[in-house]
Length: 222
Ligand code: SAM
Image (cartoon, rainbow, N blue to C red; front, top):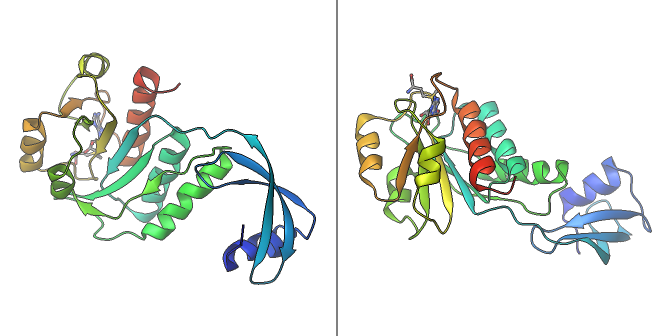
């Protein structure tokens, strides 16, 4: 594997690895490999994969849709979603979204770092920010969307009663919540079930972690 400038800087400048040193390598789809440094430069380098040490382990087919909030909290949501086993992370722009743009590359780097930290072999894709309406308009057939709505009650039974799905997604709103129009639109869609996360209003970042915990424990791979 040829290294980019940033990777070479990290491995040889920060971690002080040199030719002949071993390290664990994963690319998100082929499991974990033991690799050896074959060439080490200031701006590039070469790693040779030697043997597979762990098979690829993909998460369940769960997407997280969330409206970006403040920078540090958005970073937190992406990091926790990757740790908790989201297969894809989709920032969506809603009527009351606090943030108009995101740095997708930076968020993707957070997802990679989170996968490294938790010993994963899978990295969820962080999608470009899109309008919620547009995402709902090309919603994939068979995927169920769990709309987290603080104005409703009940969760466990709703999830258990949801029709069988070819994939799932969780939707978390921004600090200001969803507009009445968005709520009406969501509730009219056949692939949407809404759930409560308890009687307290949670911050959006807390709600994302709580919803993923609930889904993982009832329908996921926990
Ligand atoms: N609309 C609210 C307000 O301004 O009073 C608060 C929105 S809350 C901070 C952000 C998002 O977290 C909500 O849109 C919802 O998706 C989710 N959320 C927070 N608490 C929740 C709860 N108890 N049940 C379900 N979802 C919740």
